Length: 116
Image 1 (cartoon, rainbow, N blue to C red):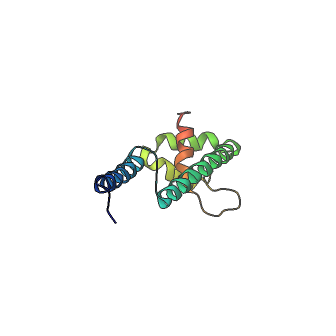
Image 2 (image 1 turned 45 degrees about the vertical axis):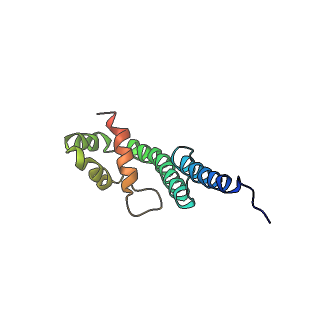
Image 3 (image 1 turned 60 degrees about the vertical axis):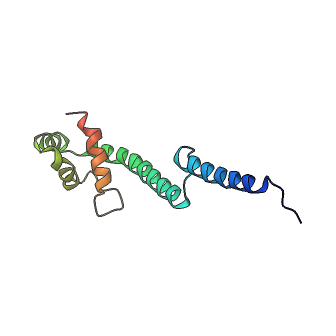
């Protein structure tokens, strides 16, 4: 059996094309591995849950009878310490939970900072 002359260049070209397509797909084409997709989905879901819980944090702050005094205390606190103080106040503790959520506290503090 005689192998055609174009076989070697054709196989090399096909192999190079597969390598190029894989590189281009993962670097610029938006392809990703299953683990990267899962990490991205978990991160996005976490961000969406925090965004939904921020509305509860804001509502809890509005219902607090000490709202004005608490806001004043947050204004006087150092910037890096405000989220911890917000957790101490209890606004970042969601209904049904006994512990404050730090991610919610940071996002809630960002939303409340507009009032400062």
